[in-house]
Length: 480
Image (cartoon, rainbow, N blue to C red; front, side):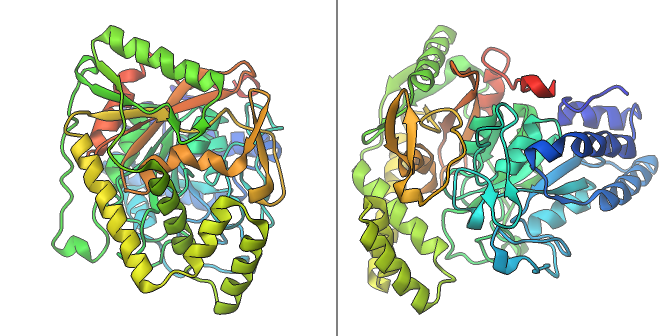
């Protein structure tokens, strides 16, 4: 076979087009690997192998008739929370264990029409609410770099599957770093799109039907190469169902096509949240590389109150994820959060008690922050920042507000891991995470490039240009 399980999706697609391999052969190659190795990782708890082969045979027939699409015949996985007719969509919540959707979400529909072969659905944490992927429905997913550590969350199963060579492409979602944190922890590429660049509908906790009032949550690609990430992004980009009656998405070309032309702002910390020595060293090394390439690099941040920005994100997040709570559940949550006394928990309690007027004022402050970013991007093309405070941490349990992370032998608040991801989330900006080497534990680390709203191709192109001269995906030693 001209490709193997670590070949890029682009290379697999080329081999399909040139008839060097069939879709069925590609499917079987991945099925065999998953069957042999996934018991250790638990990356893909919902396996659909009969369907995989049926879809692959259909793709081969289409290819034999001369049909083609950019994804036709490629195997891939979807996050468990993605809406697919007839497959579980529990979001890790036991009460949803028997729920089987009656219809595909818009992205699943688009992918199936393009001719992918679905390998299965990947693991997630309970209610997608963690930077781990451990749920009472499916159990724990481990990081292929070190099974004592998490692959991240909530798209942790997908990230582990990519790193282990189980799939060339994964569709994830991100409202709290859930694409980019797992990408960093597993040494991958991941793109959180601009808030309206890809339909949000059809992934928990977003609605099954379009709802413009749902903010910050998005769906997007993870991959082992920048080119694969771009390939999947370009197939997913477009307006929400219903809006596509009239609206078309015409994303601008990247601002630059050479690293030397980028105007880069660096944000190394958010409030008192700093990254590990290894992450900061990688950020400095990349800064030095960009300067050597001829880019302009400056430490700079938009003109808004960062404390208010962080607090407003935390408020907005809890407004979004609490939409299905009953009045009784809200009262119990408020009491519990206030009793714990954690600053973020108190903001969550405040969100649960928010009036309509309070919420409208929150959206006004969000719009003001978006305007500040627009002004900022007149002078800069991208922001470089850490995406996580460190590499992947050992599996942990207990209340999120009481957990600690160990960074350079210092305990820090677990919830502070949200500070770097939220830079892009609160205002709906595109953010691309890319590999940045290994730390002294031989665990992957990543960085992020944040771009102007709806200029996704600028951060994606930056990652693509960086790949040949910077760190790339490396296969975990035990999976090579």
